Length: 261
Image 1: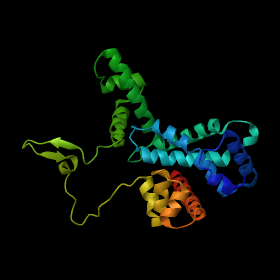
Image 2 (image 1 turned 135 degrees about the vertical axis):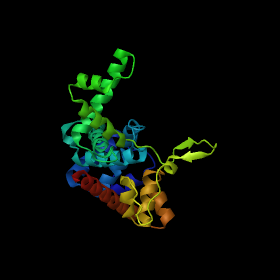
Image 3 (image 1 turned 45 degrees about the horizontal axis):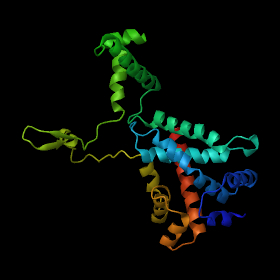
Image 4 (image 1 turned 120 degrees about the vertical axis):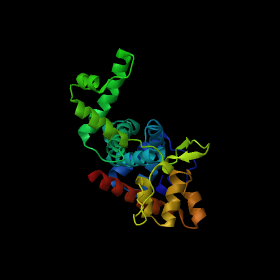
């Protein structure tokens, strides 16, 4: 079966068909085969992404990182070793997600030692709270972790940059009017330039044209097939495939660039 025949199938590939594709891709590294395999196994990235939701980073961001991990897995997989691809891809994708949480989960970058100490403090607070039946003091936490009180305070203060409060969070005021968290912050000076924090997806999409954005959104958010997108944009399915591959490559380079920072 040739590539076009695989693309025209209106169903998921069988286990044998996937194995055949992997063997072909391992031999010739055809980018079209690569795209088919990525699409076939995208569900793994979706499942693993959902396991890491509600941890301070949006699902969409996690899913994009998981998709990059899937791409790495497809490129590194050696079918001659006899392992199932799903068994190989899962730790690869999880590794990329954890790396993203480790490096990008903090709004402001802080030293690794403080991040690690912050995790230990959270565990110590839970343990000591159960032991004393109350919130432990700084001194008790410091003694438990064999650290100085200054180190504990420094880490606890630094940890506040993780999962910051939304500016849209609403409070009740004394005059029965709702007030957002943004209202409690001092106004920006007239000549200060507004600074916006943008996540990985926003930064990546800034460099895409309208057609590329449409294909990315429809493929990975609206779950549309390349054929449907091609009809929508009045272009060929192969053109959609080629643009999609280029977009994924752009995102891969952005990931690698961000990890070098």
